[in-house]
Image (tube, rainbow, N blue to C red; front, side):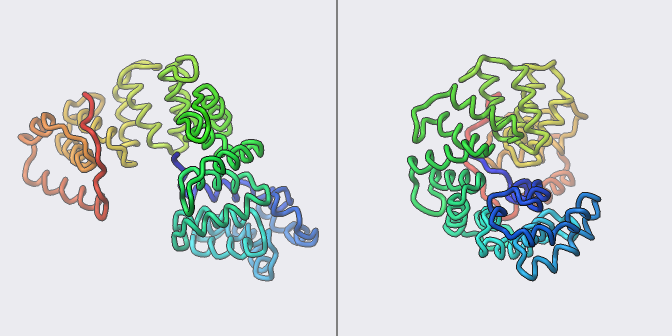
Length: 361
């Protein structure tokens, strides 16, 4: 069950609700004294006026004196680089201050950063405790991430029963991530009887809220007719939605849809563009396919050096295509080879190749 990058998630979870945090709509804000809310009125006005620098300047002294909502806002400003330079360490610091005062929003956001080591040391067990504290207050994000911790065993024991319990709580709270995670359990038959139709329904609920991974998974089900009626054209719509929100897997799926003319008119030039997005994000199959396109000049200008570059990256991920390599190498000069080697070394420094099966033709 893939998660969104924590920098994006924290921004979506908290900064997308900046004004709701100011107005006191979140569970963590409910117990905050009215005086704290009134103090933030100038911050809210500056934010609405898109004067983010002023909003940051006004929020900081309030946060420093202990205003929980101001601490959340300040953390969010630092996290998203709104009104100030992006600084994950400062974001984690201020989320922690809010979390220490019992803010469910702060506990959730700090949990995300702690889980992935953004702005603070990675600590799956610590993240799980933060999610549990947030979930106990009814926070939808905390519930969904605690459910995921139980499902995967991240930061503590794996427990399917507890995973399903908390993910159902998250679904009842309207959490898109909760809907996606629970859908994945139903798709796999993990902790619940396998039910592809119910999984597809949960994916759709999450996808309609803009959850990119849910859009991608729903696209796969529509493409294959699993749990839903087969509809390749609608699958392309879902893939495109997910890809535009940053899902590299969906970009790769779109590439194949355009390349094969499935659900959309065949267009190798457009396919190459989507493959390039996926390949740049590290999707090995897309790297391999892009290498083929650059070698043949199909949809892109023929470029043996580019073909070799993308093939080499795919090979490092375990995709073998000896015929393609044999075809490319006679067209590569020593200078080209040196440039490809240098760029591949730069991009793969410190990474370990993943075990992959040879790509299908």
